[in-house]
Length: 437
Length: 168
Image (cartoon, rainbow over all chains, first blue to last red; front, side, top):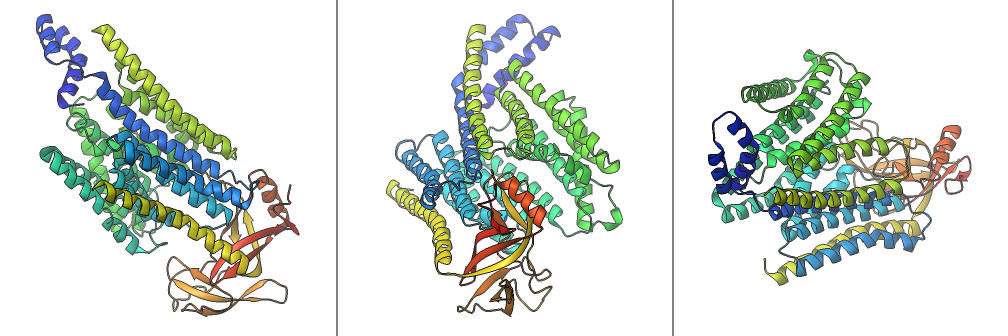
């Protein structure tokens, strides 16, 4: 969607208020509506199908790993080895097909890269189970990251790039000392050079737009790395501070993202903020993290941790203040509530009560976004609301000792549900728009 | 990138992926066929794990080289069989001896003891609960593993004289 399209959509939202307050008359409003026509429905469709192509591939990949977790010891050795190679063979054939026939389709390229990486993870997983090999998460992620770099080049895949950033965070946090020590941090940071390759490509295509993107990516990355460094910094008692730092970071990135969503189509703030919020929601929907938030003993914190805490609080205050001054709508306050809950719980530990409040807050947010999306015909809201509700159901569903085959199949099914709802909703919205016109 | 170059890179990339999986299989199969068998006593439980399925995580396995600062993060230890038939540790080495029965050990840093290279034994999810109960009842199990050139592959886990495949 271009800036002009966004203006057209925003204009449709604001026109009734402008007419009611006498700022515009009906004729001027009609002329403005004619000057700014609504964007074609297929623009939305392309973007959504790309996004949910990736999501669908991710869910199917996740489902594959779940099915692997089922433990296939009823099969013979050769049978199990076939099961280990099969997902990879299929994914590589699909990738070859994409390179041969669908090289120009972003959806196919993104989905193929995610599927290949998931298939490799599933293959390594089943072999590890077969031989009771117990490498660490950081070791497995490091291997996957090395292949992910190649996928970024071969498929020009943004999803692979994002997976690299996520994997990088996993390796630096989980395997900070375990795999290669501090060297791992610098090696993997150095391998982020493909990001520069992507950015140079963007700069060639759209010089002005790409320059702005570089700044946004760099800022997002720097903020994440700063919070990561503060979390990993050796300190006798920075446990309670870490969730607060990440809550503030995700909330602020999401808020920056919502602010700049109308300026730029490629918005790393929004992506990082959404991903961060989803991860934190997954963690804090359980009771244990709330229970572990104890009052802070400042005398036991390192200088780095105190500095990071002050910086996070300042950032949070500035964002809160900007939101108050701009008289923002309720929707922008949703992410900003989460750090407040964490902070409240650090000051006054409530454990189970906070957990119940947070789950209620999540359910409310999911339903609110879903209904708002349907009412305003905004698929991003519909999907994010649906994502939060699905996440809550999955977390409760997968918390116990249920059958992995069922969970894996549920993941695959939910990927299909996402596809179906998006396709259905986008057609319904187009039909409503045509009917209104 | 030109089309034929891209295809070459893609084919190499695919081969490398197969190589990663195959290397794990070949090394493990070679160890299972040619390695020396050892047994050791382990305690464990079945932890809830969202991604890795059901397995017995060994709670306590013998620790080696308690806070030995003189050794680097990678070391090698000779394995011997004790009078009770269970494994016992022999000489610790900084260099790979390349002969005899030994284990390659790693540790995250110099301030903690070395750990054994295996920490879990995967079980079928249908039997996982029964295995967990059996471990709780007997307190420990006997893990059989094979070793070849420092690499170890667990073969079976017995609890109260019964292997986990037979536990119902």
